[in-house]
Length: 602
Image (tube, rainbow, N blue to C red; front, side):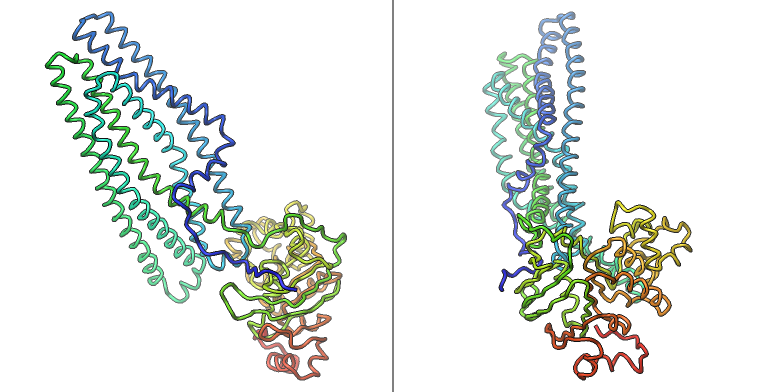
């Protein structure tokens, strides 16, 4: 039975059209619409007061120089103080409300992106470096945060000041207005000319920052390897090379920005000079009062400042566009391993019957099959071991059973229901995995065991630890169950981490158990302790073992021997030994007169 090819890897990257990403942010802002409306009202009133200021100054100057009226002068000065007081409160109100809205919306976006990444299958992370994803969560969303929390408010204020200033200029002195606005086409042309180039360069800087972050993340995660091979200088040079590229591109961006702002500044202030000259002529001819000229000049400066603010916003906006493209590219990446729209319920109780039917698997764009038409059945409660040379496909079978990937062809069933028709969380909820390389979280022993059941009581956690024979070393830790294990469990030995993983599986109490070379990291003494725990853990569960040691192989009811993605032998241990096939040859290589040789057969 064929199915569409699904491999758990992401489709090719695509860039979104420039205007779309920030518009797609609107649904995340909509819940705060009431706060936004209040902030906009405060912004409009504050901007209105700012636009009224030049007119009040005009009356003040005329009262002093034309009318020479002290009483009127005092009244206008008090009016200005009152207006500034109201404006200060309105500025506080709109700044707080807009910043709070932006911060909450961006926090929601960051949480949404993190949640989306958690849903992606392992194949996605195999093609992406952790540092790159971290950069998108931090640097890229940080750029969006700056635009949404602060700069959009400034943009709105500059637009209001620009439009209001133009209208008031026109009413005040139409002839000077045409002179003042003559600089606008120059500014717009400059913005259009430099805008696209700035966006391209900024996106390049962001990509290179992500690359540098990925290099650092990789070095930190492999710090023991780096130091044991004395490769600190090489890693320092590799990171320095990335930083050098960032600096080179950033300096190029700085040069482009410098020319951009220089051109805008020259055009703007040249326009002011021309306005001053022409306005002075009008004052000399008696067509304008001194107060009207100063008022007009203040409006001209307001317009110039608004244009300058808009160009600065435009530069930041280009950076935000690049960041938004990268963030929404991830958010819009389809999750290819997901629950169906209407999942079928799990059988109650779950029996644990597993069926592989003509299952084939290959990675995307890879013509070499990892599995090729694999079929087998595991009865409820049966213990089956997978053995074979490295690369035979054993771990892939375990990954397909947990739906970390989906088969390219064929179907996998649990209790007669195809896995892709089940709810993904429900499926994984009845499967327990004890991996070969256990990476713990950086919290306490209790938190790591309790990860299987966050609502578990302390007694349940300690009982699971005792069943896994983990209490022997836990009781010797400084704070016992509250001892911190360090990042990835570095404060514990490999055997101790493995017993924590077994305790976690015991606490989960799964119907189906997968042991991926679960005793490979244990010394002989630890293995004896864990073997007893595994014997109790396997009882009554459907178990799939990726076999490694003799004791594990002999515990299985049946062995499946894989080679080059196919099952070449099947049967109990003694029967396969008698056949003298691949399993017998592997056995002879790895087991001599019943003594284990520290080499892997898997």
